[in-house]
Length: 200
Image 1: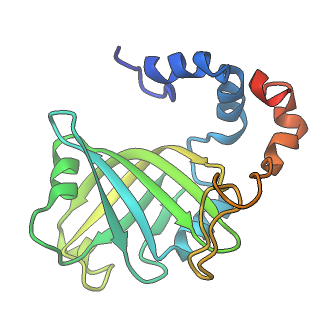
Image 2: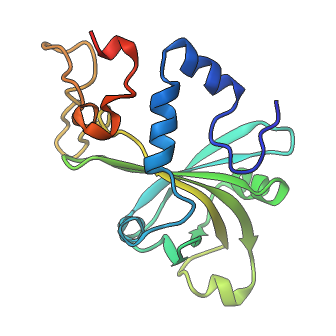
């Protein structure tokens, strides 16, 4: 099934949402957390990031993902729908940039892995910039990727481990005590749409 532009959930996601009684929750999350632009708070967070994960898709529909790292400020938000980041010297495969040239489809995942865990996803359309005027804006850049943002949304951070202290998330099953319920499931915003298994 082909999705129209702007749809967050495909047929597969919908089938699983129905299986787990999560469709109402998924729709509420889309309603209250998904945006088509970058707000000031998110822009500040992105501007402080020192790494993120970049997903791309080739012309055969096969996905790829890579780690992108740099110094704080290497991701730059130009306006509420546009961001740029540099591509530095690598292994010469150009998997990510090649895929962007072919399809333009990108997804960026930003994760803060400390005691203030956070996770932001960005979907959009990328293009590769090679002009010297663009490269000169980022020290050491071989290329620059510009992303036109179509979707921005946070994810529940409960399974993110604290890499600074080496602490495993208390929400990860298999510990000495049962995982606690996440705070957001107590909020009035979601209380009426939680799956039935959470009402017992």
